[in-house]
Picture 1 (spheres, helix red, strand yellow):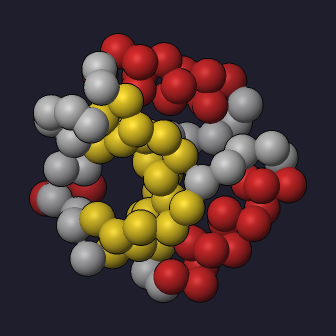
Picture 2 (cartoon, one colour):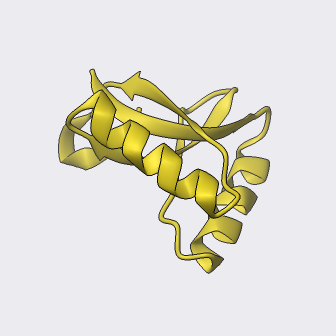
Length: 80
């Protein structure tokens, strides 16, 4: 797997997409991961756990809470 940061999980895709839009307005690029619930709001892919953890720390300073997790990257960079 590859490392990513998860910010939230929702029962509906619409709720997850709302958070993605809110984050984009703050300059944070996020995406919805998953095709059935839970729909996870996640950030970029990182090559190492430490790189992802460094980003979690930076986000926390901006009031955005998340955690490091792994995710398989699908072809063309699309999330599963």
